[in-house]
Image (cartoon, rainbow, N blue to C red; front, side, top):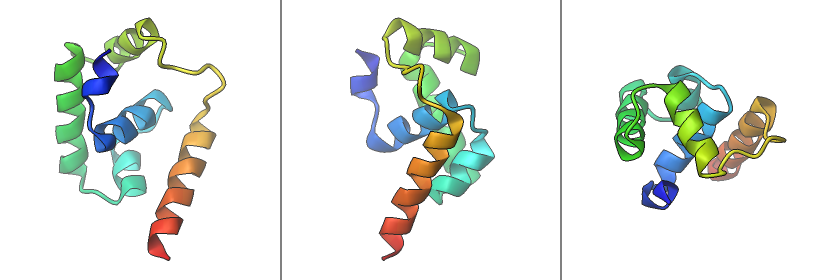
Length: 88
């Protein structure tokens, strides 16, 4: 599976994309520069051999990676709790 080739950071970015977050939102939540997120998105696209977020979503569906009960709100909630725990 391609997802096994992704770094932890790329997995977090991918989960953000699948939740519908923009690059800017992902950068804010992950506390990374926008350019870093863009670089990771390009890396993910290359690993999946896709050219768009739509193609990426289709590719992950084929890998059975998307959980249908996974909502945008839950992704942001999860990321924010991770961010808060790293501040402590």
